[in-house]
Image 1 (cartoon, helix red, strand yellow):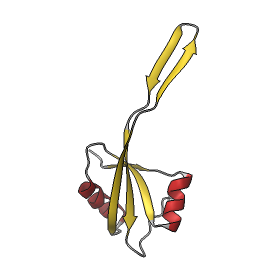
Image 2 (tube, helix red, strand yellow):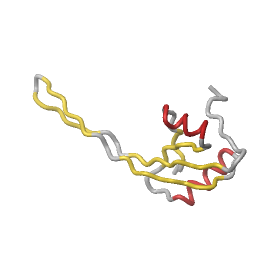
Image 3 (cartoon, helix red, strand yellow):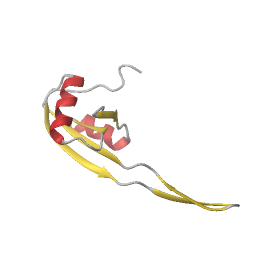
Image 4 (spheres, helix red, strand yellow):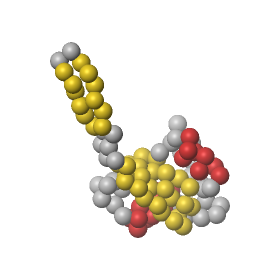
Length: 96
């Protein structure tokens, strides 16, 4: 089971990484803060000061078609915002 699924690259997350040295990741739903800290330190070689987590609820959507109303939802995800120590950085764009 992989702990870190992917980094979240949005305008808000990019602004946080540039100004506050905080990086956002999508993580597995079953992981805790200690496991997330160890995974980020092992994957990127940085030292983590603080980890904040949030569970994001699924979005429900409905669509009207000729055959009736179709309803569905997206998957629920867990996000982790990781605060790095002073002087450490993660570069997500170096291998594009």
